[in-house]
Image (cartoon, rainbow, N blue to C red):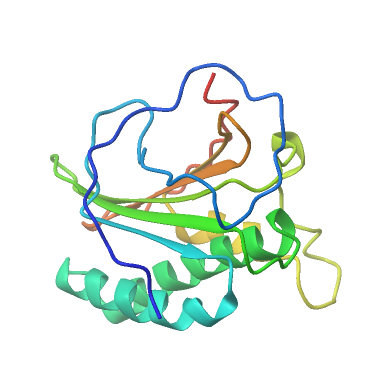
Length: 191
């Protein structure tokens, strides 16, 4: 079952760096700020518990949305894979597989000369060390540990930030046109 989708006016996080890592629980306040540097209202925003059972529903919704935005099935599948990896990383590493963490997914179509899809995954899990967010050595032959690599390969840009009050913000951008250049950025704190 999916949490209702709502379009909520964005209100930026404070610019101060968070110093605490509160434990998450079901009584946590909603996360309603899709883009700290702009006043964007997401086209779609959904909040859900950190339970893998929701991943299939999210993939189907995202695949359908990408198709309606004009992306071919291959591009849609790649975006779904990147978002799936991002959410799995939050569940596994951020919330340590706890089913009671909250995750917010926002999707915003950015209209400009080269339109793009802005995807954000927000959580209130423990802060990750921004300097240590990277893929494992690709020469190692073993399962797992490729989520960050997959996300970076698929998305045009990727940025990780700490959120005030704990948690992370993963911002991913993918062109809706023919451009497929690769750039990867690692942000600091929202503050």
